[in-house]
Length: 253
Image 1 (cartoon, one colour):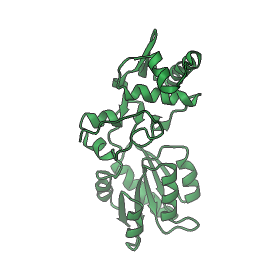
Image 2: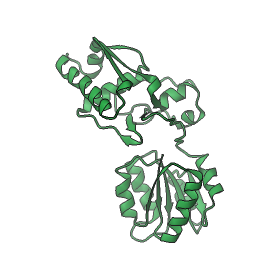
Image 3: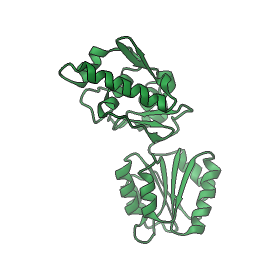
Image 4: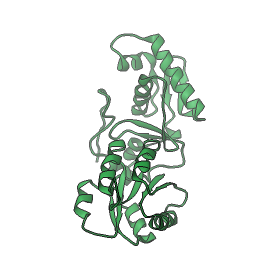
């Protein structure tokens, strides 16, 4: 779990970090007194939760929150301030929480347990897959980058099929209207090599003229949804792999 802390007062930031660590021991915490540097760091990491002071020079917490949401629309925003006058603005941004200083660990725990976009569905697996909204793949919280853009879509289709073996001709038909056997071989090799470089080669299986995802080796919000995981059910807002034209998700809840 990646946590971003921003407060222009260093002493307050230290206190906040101590309280957060009490609740989220083991999380990756990125602390900043400079909002601009915090924004740049958010572009390098998939930030799950941002604790933001509101009254800051240059960029206040409300404006920083807007920019963070452009980077990651499902980031959980928790505002931390000495004043309650900003509550309406905070909730207009669909914030997860609003804490008054001095922040106590028990209050942080309450907010973590009621996140707008729960992150607790992640287990100990290295590969995390996000299907709700846009399709994304993460390795230990960091985005996975393939060499070819179409490799990601091919991987998405295999994820959608939930471990079913897919014939390469079927996969070709999903990706293109015409046959591109040589390009498809490049995509498959790209997926294999990318996952191998991450030490996750057991996620993707290729056998003769078919391939599939080993669903036991990934964490996936859609899979958790179908298992009835309450956090995953809360995360689903009717959007599934938005960037592709072919996905259909059956909402059974």
